[in-house]
Image 1: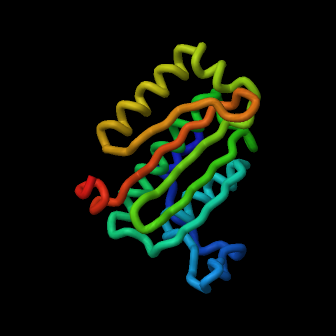
Image 2: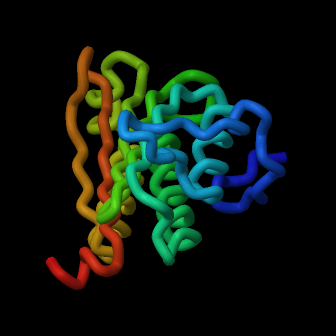
Image 3: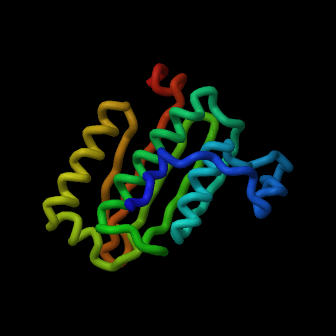
Length: 163
C-alpha cells in the first residue's frame, strides 16, 4: 500500500511537544497555523529536518495555503526517488505577506542527478508550470555539495493583487 500524500492526511489532535508555543524576542507568539503546523509535523514524522518560523497570525486562506505547500513538498521531495528518512532539510517561514518554502536534498550531487534523470526533469517542469499557474515564484538551484535546492514563495492574496 502506498503512503498517502501530505495533502491527503487528516489533522491529528495537538501534539504534546507543541503544547507551549514559541515566542519571538518581543514576546509575540510565533507558532504556525494548525494546518501548517500539521504539515511540518508530518514532514518531521517522515524523518526530515524541518525548521519553521511564523511572524504573523494565519491568513484567511490558510487551508488553500497548506494545500499548496503540501503539493510543493510532495513534488520537491519526490525528486530523489522513493521516500526514505532524513533525506531533505526543509524550511517553512510564514510572515504577514508570504510563505517561504525550501527543500534542500541532503544527498550530495542531487542537483546533478535531477538535471540528468528524465523523471526528475519532468517533475521539475511540472512543478514550474504549477507554480507559474498559481502565481508562486519558484527557484531551483545548486546548494552546498551540489545538493538540489528548490524554493517556493507563496504570496498572500492581497500581496498577489498588489504586485
